[in-house]
Structures are given as structure tokens and as C-alpha cells.
Length: 300
Image 1 (cartoon, rainbow, N blue to C red):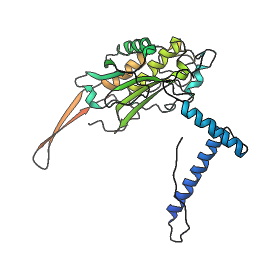
Image 2 (tube, rainbow, N blue to C red):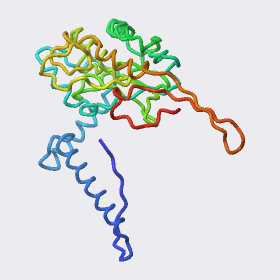
Image 3 (cartoon, rainbow, N blue to C red):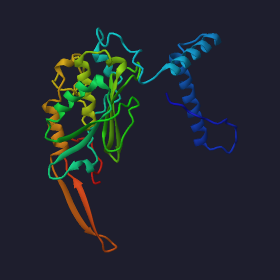
Image 4 (cartoon, rainbow, N blue to C red):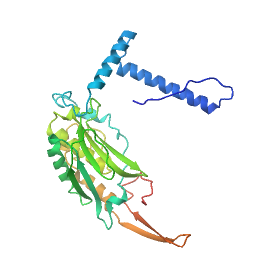
């Protein structure tokens, strides 16, 4: 939920048009926020008593909610549910931009991406993590260094690495999510989150698919297909309602990774600065067919 703050508006004949428009925009946003709270948070109360009760219930839920509380999760996992529906709330839906990591993590002379993965998962996720990472390590473009660290249900971001974690994020509509920190068009850090509300009691295939999918986004890869109900493509970045056919990265993603991290090497240019010093610039040259929407300068 977005929270907006505003000041009391007092009429002033000298007030600029932009100030008035800004104030009206803030008021409109407050109105929308109030409606959403009334409808979804308070369950559409029809009188003051119902609104007070809704607020009390909401406060109790907030007080009792904890990322490491796995008592309030789906008891039957995803059994009987349409797995395809959980992609509707994917923040990456429709955004198929391909990103690459900061050049500090890409070795010259086709050395590929060298990346540390901090395994902050609890014991229940170790098999899925190990299997997924073993699959991704088959890519010649990746050299991965998985390190098990203390369990972190808060999923804190760490600069220069990918954190993989699990927690009960509640009934969000998504089973997993990846959050890449993009600075200047390149990835500086990544967090892959597994949502235990849906996955704590889910079958292995659902968990393995989600792990492979979110880690893949962490390397900068987009989706390969966003229709979960068409024929499966055999890779974990393809939306699916039948994950047992899409458990592995697949050649299509290995080829993309090669284009992102192996298609060229660092180029070095030198020029004489105005102060008489020689300025040296290092560039990573990539396959532009793999990055059709990427328009940022990769000089770092």
C-alpha cells in the first residue's frame, strides 16, 4: 500500500496552477487509497461499528503476522489449485527486459559471470536449491559460488550477490518473486524469495520450478513465454500450469546467457585527457540480439 501525506490547502490567489494541480492529485490519490482500505482491508463496512471491527481485525492480523510463522499457510499446498493463476500477480509480467550484472562480476576473455549466491534458506529448501543450482551451473556462461549462511526470513539484500531465501509472505498471489537492484541499467544485487504461504506444503515439482524460475531472473533473464496454458517449452522461465515439464533451465536460457556473458570480451580504449593523463576505459561487448531493449551504456 502506498501512503501519501498532504498539507491543509488554503486558498491563495497567487497560488500557481502547478501547485493547485499537485494538491488535487494528492487529494485524488488519498481518495483512491481510502477506497482501497475500505474495500479490501476493512471488508467494505456499511457503518461505523463494522469499520471499527474491521480495523481491530486488521490490527490483530498485523500483530500476529510473522515471516517465520508457518502455521498459517495452505495446509494442502497447491493441491487442487490452478498453478497458472499465480503468474497473474508476477511483477515481471509483461516486462521482458534482459539485464546483465555489473561488469565487476563478469570475467574478461569470455570468462562469463562469476556470482556468489547466499543460501539463506531453511533446511526444508536445501534439496530444491542444490538441484536448481546444479542445473544452472551447466551453463558455460556461469561460475557460481553458493554459500550457505544463517537463515534469513527477512530476506535482506546484500550488495554484489544473489540472496536466496524463504518466508511466509502471506496470501500475495505469487509463489515466488525476484527483486533485482538495477543501477545504471545493470544488476548490483538480487534477492530470490520463495513464498511459504503457498509452497511450504507444496509438492517438490512446484518448489523446484519456482526455485529455478526466480534464480534465473536473478541472472538477468526474462520469461520465455507468459501463457501458462499453452504447450510447455521445457524450461523453467516458461509460465506453466504443469511444472514437472519445466523444471530445468533449458537450452534456450543457456543460449541467452552465452549471448549476455560470453559473446564478447572486454575492450579497452585509451585517450589523452586535458590534464595530460591517459584515460583508460574498459567495456563489456555483448550480443545485441540478446538485449534488444537494452539501451544503457555498459561502460562501468
